[in-house]
Length: 481
Image 1 (cartoon, rainbow, N blue to C red):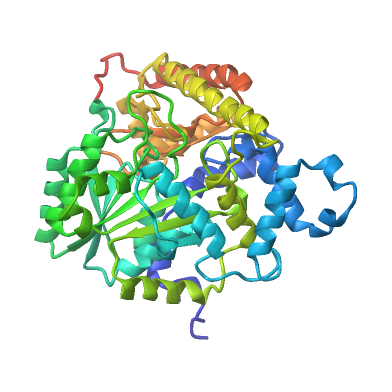
Image 2: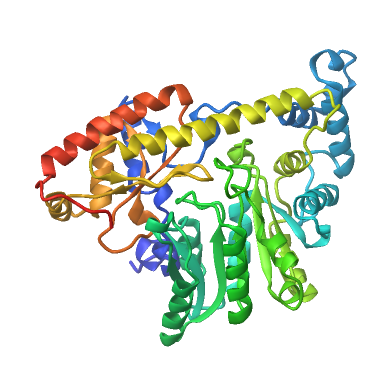
């Protein structure tokens, strides 16, 4: 019998090419071990609530009332829910065409898009137009939608930072485009060198690739660095010179753990630069409710905002969004609440501030504990996590370990991470899943385990690592690459 359409060998080759290391071999093995009864610490994905972070009270109260509007008619509702949560639930229900069970506009509820525009204006100091803001099921859906709009074929290239979040490599493969890597410099705290960008574009063009867009992840995933204003200006100027769309992945903008480089949006820097650059460079910026101190990954709320895109292009993006009818409405409400939280004087304000501040302060401490823990280990070096939710230590693997990995048919850092998982239950992501320089090995772990558990986790990692190095070390010494 001839092969069927959904037999593996006849599938779309782009589907088979797409790889997503965050849910790859390590995660699957961790899930198997968990079923066998082993305690697994899933640090492979930025999923705060799965690692014990408590939801913020106010947004959950508002969405609970929106999900069960009959509670608003209960005479005792004011005994259980604060007045501002009740008022906000009524506000959001009034914006919908039939509650949370009804489709919204394909771009998202207009009133919530207006709240997002007001948030952007407060943040950047420049007005934002709700008509160029689309609400999405998490930022990832927005990224995929824009990449599918840009990529026309395998000769279209997208500049992506390496190490990179594998959403980008997977989506570019899926849409049949070409990933054009530009390398971040680990010894300069994962800094970006514009000369490296020029070299990447030049090499791509020599292979017949038309580079059409550049991705920045700020703060960085997996590398945790925060881009300075000067760096952003260089990037925007480069996009202007090379006629590239800039895709600003800014989902970790609330996650900042140092004071030297606060988050500044690509949009603000672009508009500060003034004409002609501020009128010419096309920018799409992404945000989500999944990160920050919200951590509402399962709610799937996100948005993207378009700057300097022609109206006909926005119409085409709207048309494609319409095919999916509507982003999920509860996720949209979470986004509205994130960009328009309780204000001073509101009944829920003090509790909201206490909860959110507590989460961010704990994350800052955990970032330091993890960095210090990694740097205390043999043959491990780690830059401080300035922002986002991850540590990305370099593991200097001895030649004998690399040799044994090859014998086992494994990439060396996959070999190391599998051994770590089996010995400790710590589920990480090998650096090869994000891209890295040849002969250099890393792993990515979140900084999300509970603060009280962090010392024990780092002690467990250190014990495994130092025993691993003892087993494979040839005592010739290693220098940082």
